[in-house]
Image 1: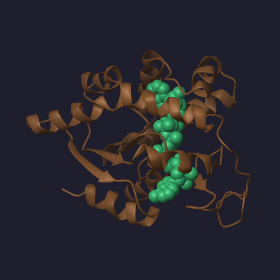
Image 2: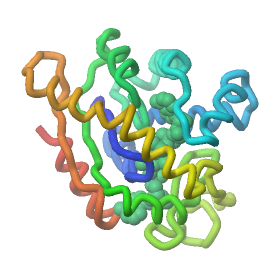
Image 3: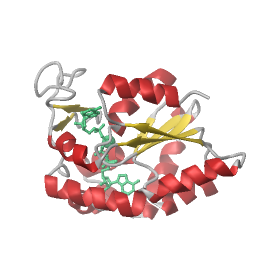
Image 4: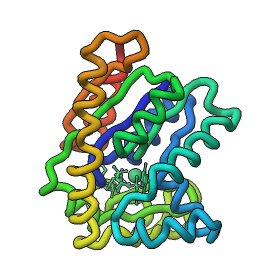
Length: 218
Ligand code: AP5
Ligand code: ZN
């Protein structure tokens, strides 16, 4: 299984990625998680990315494409992979296409902007794994603690309301065009084209999980 989860910030990509990667035994390639790890480790990439991420902008295509290229060379991508938060621009999608990286599905999770702010303001994350929770909609078993490790949960630096509004505008301008990109590629019937499916990202986490699994069937 080789797929892209597409959708605005806060659509629930990371939340659903956990279920999909477990079911298919594939790694989650989240460029956001990879960048946050680099920021924490203060690598040169992390130092470069931090300012842009905190402001809700996009890290340069060259950096991201290099990051993904290196990640795909690690041995665990043989049974497949799930891209979360990548590609995010037309040049990133073109880089995947030009490198003939196989894709079976592109699934877009559709969530209206009005719902996104409340999801982001209640989000709490486990930094080491990238697992995310919501204080009301998807609470951890013990408040403030990760379900699996028991380690503390934190708020993301880019989840301030003003920053979220900027991230949504960036999504509209730079990432939303990928919907037309993948739907027209799918309609063209080209042999390498992935199946393109849209699902509503509104409802409970479990309801959406069923929708996603259904979308990943032939
Ligand atoms: P990234 O980490 O990719 O952030 P994002 O795309 O903005 O997505 P989020 O992680 O915010 O949302 P999500 O869809 O994963 O939602 P989640 O499941 O957590 O990127 C961060 C930054 O890195 C970017 O801004 C950019 O600077 C940089 N970057 C990353 N990739 C890049 C790239 N390719 N190119 C350039 N720059 C890049 O859920 C959100 C909340 O909602 C949680 O609290 C969750 O518990 C809750 N929730 C989930 N499902 C439901 C539900 N069904 N009902 C109610 N609440 C729910
Ligand atoms: Zn995410």
